[in-house]
Length: 256
Ligand code: PTJ
Image (tube, rainbow, N blue to C red; front, top):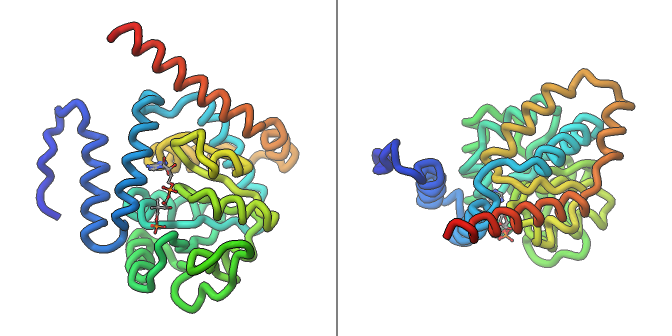
């Protein structure tokens, strides 16, 4: 990649670096143009969430960590944006939660599956599911290429982590009886509303925090982990996130 043109003291350096990363991975075919648009929507929500991990998101992260630790066969679903932004972190999370990693694309092509697999392997993944003919099973109720999943991955999973997923597929996974953990900056999206646990936060902050939380909880008893999950209410949590946006905007309205 060309040297970065972003000055370190730029007030929006972090956000610009993320854009730069996505463009770099767009140029090599990992990210699709739609992924850049989806990121723009995410950025807008991040802006009105104050660009930090809010307390309700921390509660969701704790419930997600407990759910992953309780799972029998957890799978982390990876698309282009996720591979571009947090490949190393996904590999670390998979290792400490004993999760499988599956490439699962909205805009599926074999070339993209292969290059995303390469990015994940370079980040340290030993096994990457869902590539080529390995994605031979189908999610019922979904049409076209979007329905393909790996019989040794998402099809078999009891818990699926879907960072940046679309609403149709989240709903279909829930209907299949999977416990779905979503990461989505938009608390109003169908994904957010239909997942069992939604972390309303940027993947670049949420995944490292999820790793920390798993490290904290990994030696806790099964009962304690079950209690954490039981105490979590996704609808209530999403309402708290929307409340935080309203609060943020009304505070801004006072200073403008
Ligand atoms: O790589 P592919 O082919 O699988 O395509 C990936 C995209 C993201 C294009 C595809 O899954 C898609 O179209 O997703 P949607 O339906 O646009 O949903 C993306 C959601 O993720 C939106 O609600 C965004 O607000 C949110 N989002 C975007 N960037 C981030 C994010 N959430 C958390 N962290 C982000 N960095």
